[in-house]
Length: 576
Image 1: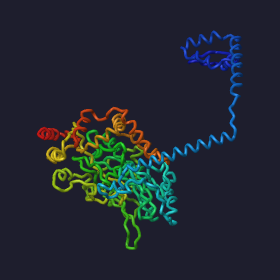
Image 2: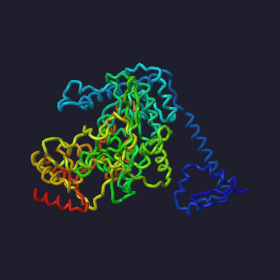
Image 3: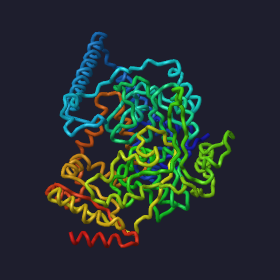
Image 4: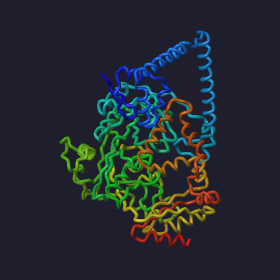
């Protein structure tokens, strides 16, 4: 009886005896398989007689017996020798690890990072600035409600969405450690999956008398969304992460968009360009590949380089406030200024169990599941006619007075603007903007600051009706830093884009930096810095030449919106 054997795709019918002999051929005979299939078949056919196979099998058995006798000669160590080698190995590892820790501390002495608090320009020279950050013991004396809080939150959002924040691990470091600075421990980390769950979690945290830290994508450079354990407040903090609330959808025929708190600005920009190719979202520059959330832009203030759009802000939002009643008890108030038809507070009967949070949760779930819904519209009410962008910024920034025209601490408007965690933002409405039909970017270098300010005043901010898209100032140090340490990142953004892949690589970097090793916080940055000079210059040579010869630079993006703004800018630039 024969069994089929396949060799490089060709089927050969061999007896079971022949197949067994073929399987026992020595390894060197397998070199025949690297020829073409026809030559391989010829080689096998020439050895197809039983005697040939038997002879090969005998040779194979002889070689196998020799190899077995060789493998039986094992090297044996005395127990004392094994113990000595093990001890020497552990001692060497300990010495190397201690030396590396000392090197890390010595290196961090020169890494003066701001504390996140108000400081003068010379605070980096203070004695405490050079000291490496040390883990501080947790000052919490937990009460019974605080001990029961993690289990209560697990019942609201599910056990898999509640993490232990008392220890920093590779899983929790993304929540407990800031991108550039700031870190601490928290009682727990909770990630609600709906607006209702977010409000219920907030109530449970407040009732347990814990500090609430709302958190988006935790991509900020100031550490404002991570806990600090060296504060006088001894209440345990709880991180309320809104990462899972990512739903967003257009309203008013694409003139505006409604976003839940966890919607990323990069995700939003991609969606709007897909839905409405002639329009774009607010934030399309800066650290968009990190995909920070739209709610964080409202809470902390983003978009400082935008001249036509202004910084991120809106008076149309759904958010929660915590206040105290006359008995000294904490109360949570839901404020609804979305101004959307069907989501106004007046659209629901009081004490009916229905409200804007539940209705928006249903709408968001339908969007997530792909159900087609009639596009929502703004209501004809006070909130429906409120601002969903800083529409006055164009006039304000062109005043050129001695006062600051734009600053992050501008808390005018609804409480959600520049709230910095003082309220819990659940959803916001934002304007979309016409996309330019043509766009040009200029690099302008200046010999001194006076000329730079004159260019800003006479060319960029001459007329609020034809402002550039954006204008960003760079000094010589900025150009040097990009060239000395940012080449690899620049090329990655150039070839990989600003989408999900870059965000995934950034999360991997943050996970590595959160590992419990002394070398972990700096290994990625040190590797990129060491390999930087192996990569060609990312900035074109003509810009690098200007960057080395001049001290002040401006990158100006100008677009054509059908109103002649590009031509007007070019005329002012030529005249300057």
